[in-house]
Length: 326
Image (cartoon, rainbow, N blue to C red; front, side):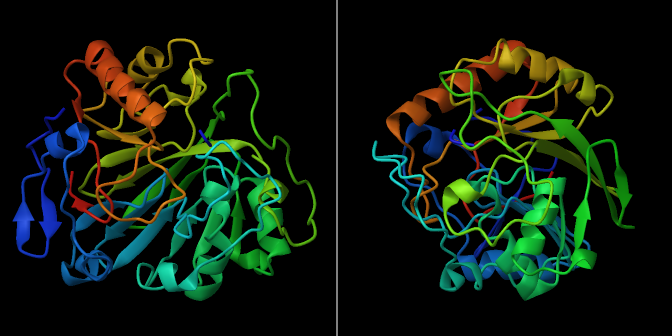
């Protein structure tokens, strides 16, 4: 949770206000200013291009996927408030906060929300977005019970365990049982599950990990894309997925052995690897993303490890709100 400079020219394009352009990650990796579409442009571009498939990073492990006029969200955490995590003053009693003025301009619609796990930096905004849009929430039994606690109807909540392949016509969602990353003590923050409906959560520690999932979206006539929300995995569960693109969480520690080599091999060396969960998710979603010094080093280490373990994979370091086409 707390946790190359080249790209595949096969279909990588960036939508921006001036039109489509090739994506270059060199500026971001080097720390130079980056350009991105405005929030309004990002929210509307998918609707404007009927039949297009676009992927926009919303920080942490959050994504907006527009498939024609249909929208899927993954771990949409947009409120991004201060808990003291990045200043050395972490407060587990921090009240849960939802910021509609930030969320509403970005989320005009959604039909499915895929939740990897229920820590606050993944689940915080999910109930609000689901209530506002009517989106179905796909997640663990913990996500199901937390959704009930927020007043969502059971018919809007789809509990999954891993192994399901859900058919939505234009795309399928395969659910993969996964693992949460380990901290420096080989443990994690807020472990636990919810096996029944709890009181409505009020503070960040009321949102436990709740088991962890990964997802693979296969678009009809388009790419297969793997999403993870934490930097660990059960490699046996990944055999046969062979995604075109893998959204890979940056490791917060070195507690997981051979993380990148095992992951690249298990995923059959994806054509494109997109690092996620490396930004400071308690700062606004403005480019260039704010990166803590330790996280900058971890991002650089991840890029180097991918290049070593899977030299034919291309690494794309994403910008916020920017539409990528694979």
